[in-house]
Length: 348
Image (cartoon, rainbow, N blue to C red; front, side, top):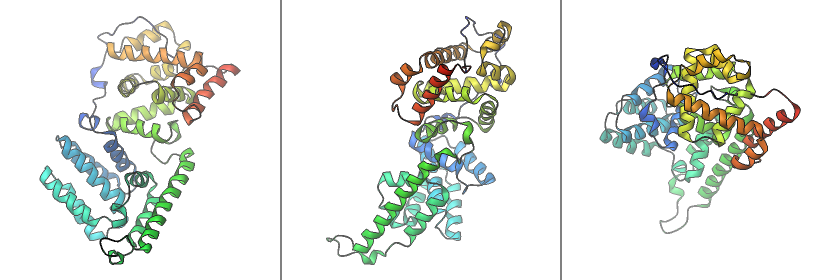
């Protein structure tokens, strides 16, 4: 991906109806709550119509605190309780959550959910809970099923004595399973299980940061970006992913993604050509692209060009300056850019 700087200004050719309108309610949520929303959108426990109803329920709520509670409640229902709660209580709880319209109702549902969670789950530290959330549905189900077979509280000794040794052994077994599942999951990262697949060259936390940003866009805008990634050369998407992960701020990434979606929705062929190699574009083709942008979008494209040049012209220095962990996956992507530069493969 390479975008040549030209001193254009925006014009009346901008099509404002194509500019993505972000979901402000989701945009302002803490990242941890966004991650739970991502889990809900990706889990197989939430099917098509059910997912649509869930999104509609959340979208109708304007109170930020209530939105947080609802996402937490739906997350606990579908991610934790779905595999282990009997059918009747499960559907009863799902209906109760779907009818929540205010904080008082949400507080009552919170109390009921707490009473349904397995005791071993409630005793987990926050790190283990986070690890469980990030496991695949099957691995998570196995661990949660083991939790429901936990020793009875009657095994507990008197209140001023430590827990029974069987309870401790059971907790250690659960922790071990979580860590084993986490390790296996890391090995499976080369085969992404989400809707984006290998068209998105990001892993781990960087991938989740991308998903957290994407929840702010509606389904049609997300589909437009997926199609763009499908049609653009993989090394162009890779270079963009590198900048997303280590060079741009969250707001800069948001502006860039919005600009790429906007251009692709209106002028897909020109946008693909621009992303792959502007060297093959005539002055008129470049002018057609830039005259359709707003001032902010033009600034974003010019910033992208500057950072791409920084990456391509001296990827070693770029890696030293920006790669938080030089030996990470992103570091290996930067090394690919360096190798292409050395061997003379055409750069974008």
